[in-house]
Amino acid sequence: MIEMQNIVKSYGSRENSTQVLKGISTTIADGDLVVILGASGSGKSTLLNIMSGLERPDSGSVIYDGKDITTYSDDSLTAFRRETVGFIFQQYYLLPNMTVEQNVRMGADLAHNPDYHEIIDAVGLSAQRKKYPGALSGGEQQRVSIARALAKKPKVLFLDEPTGALDENTGRQVLDYILKLHASLGFTIVMVTHNQNIAETAKTIIRMNSGNIAEICHNETQKTAYEIGW
Image (cartoon, rainbow, N blue to C red; front, side, top):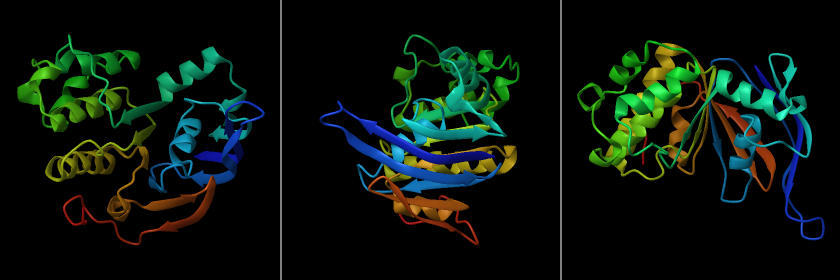
């Protein structure tokens, strides 16, 4: 379980400070699939970064199973991110001089996971494992980044606009992989997106507005990547 208690975050100098998060409190259950929606500037990516330990809040607590990660030293926070969470971003951040298999193995090595080949197969890249990123399509590169994140065996997977740079067909394919892996592996997913339709695939929807949570709602039934509009 992830608990966020009264999270406040500002950017800029004291004279020109902009408060991005204004006292956010919410709880995310283990195994949930959460989509965070909101206009640009609403604070959703900042919330994701603080929840995942990429950034520290100005005040407030982020608690994982009773442990407040905001009290961790930089070294302890780095270890937490390595051992507990995975990240998928709109940009793929693949190493161009390494093959698909080598990129995925980087994530696996962080968790001492020898079974990363299964993840490559699961995202449909068995035939591409010896190729370099430059020889792959955008959708294939995003699937490599997904496999690399999952090879760490994270308890929580954070995604920031994972389909934002993809066309509709490729975006649906990537989302379909993410949803199927979530269903089979049972980890927690927290996803930020501008695509309101993707919220129909989630269990929990958090809507943000001007640094606050405007609404939290739940879908009684979840649609697949191919049932939603785009």
